[in-house]
Amino acid sequence: MRKFINGITVISIISFVFILVGCAKTEPVRSEIPLVRTQTVHSNAAGQAANYSGEVRGRYETQLAFQVSGKIIKRSVELGSIVRRGDVLMEIDAKDIQQTVNITSAQVASAQSQLSLARSNLERYRNLYEQGAVSKMQLEQYQNAYEVAAAAARQASALYVQGANQLGYSLLVADADGVIAGVNAEAGQVVSAGQPVITLVKDGEREIEINVPEKRIDEMRNAGPVKVSFWALPGVTAEGKIREISPVADKVTKTYKVRISLVNPPPGVNLGMTANVTVTNTQQQAAVYIPLSAIYQTGDTPNVWIVEDGAVRLRPIKVGGFGNSQVQVLEGLRDGDIVVIAGVQKLREGQKVRL
Image 1 (cartoon, rainbow, N blue to C red):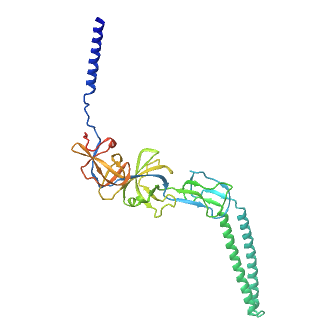
Image 2: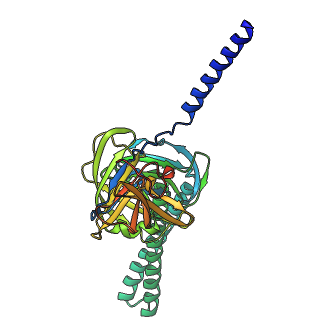
Image 3: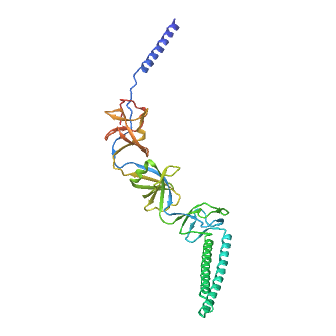
């Protein structure tokens, strides 16, 4: 009997514990108001900056080529070599050209000999004509022969000079001080006249070359301040000025080449360095820019969450250009609107939030 009573007591205690646990589970959980990150909308009349990757280039770049055809027998420079005006960069085999010079030299000697003979004959027949021994017609024949010989002598001399020039063209010489930026031929290669073999960047100004897509070329024409930084020189910036915009797009990339002059290039800027160019558009039309993270897409319509009276409301917008992790809003926002810029996927219409 005592065991039976003790069993009932234990069962009663366990039942009471379960009831307490059940009551604890059925208590309502208090919902917390989420904290959101926001941004107040302001119209920006200064426009938006765009970044372009570019390369340090020389203001004046020359494609050097031989003026005669031949086989390259010597190359005296390497990529990056510093050269001075008059330095020999390459040399082609001049054996055939030398033979041409020898031929024209012999022709000059022959023509001079013929001219000397014609001059002697003319003087002899002029004396005979003055003595009445020959007719005027015979004198005129020797006069004409002398003029033909003189013309032949001048022609031979011109051919010799031309051949001598060709011999000089067998040496490719630097026309200015500078740096070798490209070598397109090697010793043993046969090149034709006018074929570029060496790129020489002349000493002087340094520029940045960038490629701009066609949809932004109008913005580039209205560009304001240009800031240039260099990946190899952390913390170093320079002021730039747009000098040239190509009028024709590249056939492959469909982009336009833009040259930016460095106003005061900092020390350490070398050819071929990678640069980052920041261009600010100076169009005076006011625009609204918000972070890309603020966009909440529903179907094909972009929206943003607007905070009004402590709650969020979804508002459709019309977007414009993208760039620098921001998007331009053409319609749907006005000055003073508070836009949620983080965690937009976790919100619902009418939800209370804390700023």
